[in-house]
Picture (cartoon, rainbow, N blue to C red):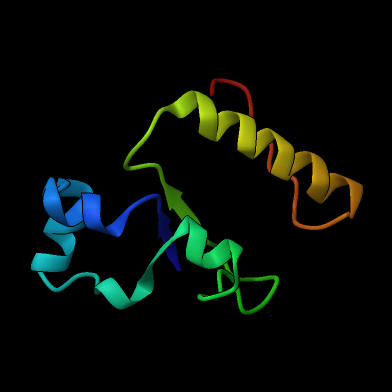
Length: 91
């Protein structure tokens, strides 16, 4: 599943990293969910612990998303959910 902030904005602005892939048939809008759809349960982000949901911030300001991401990570750690990913030297 690919999550984005706004499907409408991706279409309106023809955002290349999403829109062009849909136009080329490499992705479909059906597998691209808005973050709000995942959060409220309209679309499922992951079907199993092995699945990965990629989120592309295609609208808004990064500062707000960083604050939200920090809260999500803190809650996931509290509940011992997910897999901790760390970067090696040189990243």
